[in-house]
Length: 452
Image (cartoon, rainbow, N blue to C red; front, side):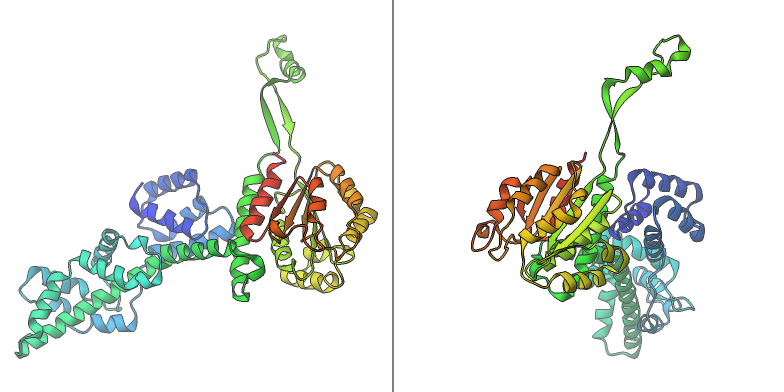
C-alpha cells in the first residue's frame, strides 16, 4: 500500500472513523484501479469503501478535502511570495536559484505543484505527521525548511545583509521574500497536518483525562467534552456486545436436524447440523438515587445506557429520592439534558429513603425483574435512618439474574453514619466504588459480558 493512502487512512481513524483492515484493502484496490488524478471520483469511491454511516461519511469528506487539498496561502504569504522577482532573478548559485523558483507563487497567489511536492517530501522527512500540540508548529516548520534544503539561501542572505552595495541590498530583499514565502508555506502545511493528526490526538488525550476525572468534581466547561467521550465509549461497547445472539456449540451434533437434512440421501449424513445456544439479549433495570450527592453520576450512567440501546434489548429506568418513579418516558421523548433537568426537578426533592424506593418498585414494577434481568443500582446507600427494607432487596436479588451496585462513595465510608451499604452488600452480585466515566464503562462492560 502506498504512503499516500496509508496517511489518509491514519487521518481518517484519528478523526473517529473506524476503517477496518478489510476496508483499507478494498480502498487500496480501488486506488490501484483509478489512481489519484481524478479527485472527485476518488473521493466518491473512498467514501463508499471506507464510510459505514452518515456520520462517518461526513468525517470522510472533511478529512479528504483537508488531506488532499493544498494549504491555502494567506494574504501575508502571497505578499511574501510576490516580494521578489522570483524565477526571473538569478544569483548564480544553482541551489539558491532553485529555491527562488520554488518560492515564486502562481498568478492566483498559490504555490506551484513543484513547491507542494517538495514541501510534502520535506515534511515527511521531518516527521511532521507526528505533531501533537499546536505549540510544536514552529519547530516542525523549521524542521521542514531544513529538510527542504533552505540552508544555502539563508547563508547567502546573511552574506548579502552585511554588504552595503545597492545590488547586494536588492538581492537581500529578494532572498528575504523567498525565505518568508517558503516559511509561510511550510507553516501552512504544518497547520494542515496538525488539523489532520495533531488535533485529533490532542482531543483523544483530553478525553482520556476527562473520563478518569471524578464525576462529582467536573467543571461546567468539561461537561460537553465528557458527553462526547461517553458517547464514543458507548458506541464501542455497543459494537462489542451487539454480536450475533445465536452461538454455535462446536462439537455438539444435533441428531434430529441432521437426519432431517439428509433424508434425501438415504440417511447418509452428508450435511451435519450442530446444536446452537440462544444468548439472552441484555435486559437492564436501573434504579438511581438522584439526590444531590449522586446526581452527576446518574447523568452519565443514563447517558451511557441510552447510547447502548442497540446492545440492550430492554431497558427500564427508575429514579428516586423519596418516592420511586419510572423516568423512561422523559428520557425517550425529550433531549437528554432537558430530560435530566425534569427528572431532577420532579424526583430529586425530598429526604432520601431507600426502603420506600424498594416498596414502590415492589408494588408497581416488580414484573420488570425476572431471571434475565440485570439490576443496576446507583446510590450511596444513605437512607437518613429509615428502614432499608432488606427483605424486599433480598427478594429482588433472588428474582434477578444479577444485582450490580455502584456507589459514588469510597469503600472506606461504607457503613459509616446512616450508610446501609454493608447491609445491602451480601445480596449484590457485585458492589463497587464508581467515581469516573471509566468506572461506569468497566461496570457496564462486565454487566453485558454476563449475557455472552
